[in-house]
Length: 234
Ligand SMILES: Cc1cc2nc3c(=O)[nH]c(=O)nc-3n(C[C@H](O)[C@H](O)[C@H](O)COP(=O)(O)O)c2cc1C
Image (cartoon, rainbow, N blue to C red; front, side, top):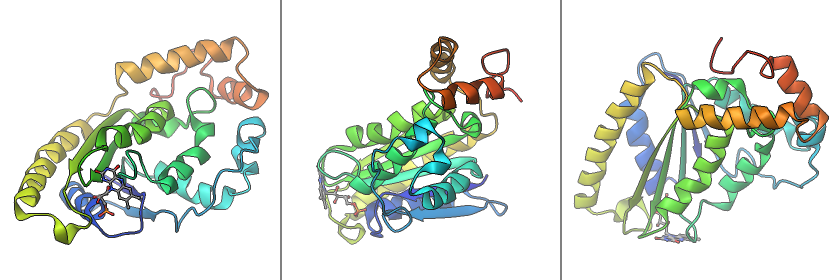
């Protein structure tokens, strides 16, 4: 299983360490692992020019960085997004990256490969905000069409990994084991959830009625999705 990790922080704190526990449990000797650290690997804010939507993603002023990340995401079977909670939400740098992938929301030009992928979203907080943070990321992954999404949020009662108690770490090791087993089982036969397929069908109706712009409609037509083809069927 190839794995790409996107870290919403450059700190090697609790979030990073928990992501590494999952990685070590989930990778095998054949896995290709790619790690993306934010903001280092995508330091720009979305400018709101909408060129990605209207003309194509290659017109984005930050295409070079975004495209490198797209390639890293495409080659993975499992996507891991890991973010600390900042004021009840994901980090600004993670949000900025997700903004740059707005064009691949199902309502525009979904990336076909996403319909065959699993994702794991990880967040840590001192106490609270994991649910809203995981949702910040899950909103995008759902609308990208990712087939199966798992979430893990942990209140670590600390500001770094060193400060996490042995008791909490023991809980985390156990949680990582249980959830990893579930992910490995799912990876044997990845099919999009009913919710993903239903969302796709709604978007298809929108596109059939003319969609939002020429670039999107042309894309759906070329893919054959306005006819009988579907992204999860080869
Ligand atoms: C700017 C900022 C905002 C934070 N907001 C919250 C919060 O809303 N809720 C919370 O419980 N912890 C909050 N924290 C604490 C971190 O989420 C927590 O320590 C986390 O585990 C840090 O992850 P890291 O070690 O990977 O950097 C915040 C920390 C920072 C730096």
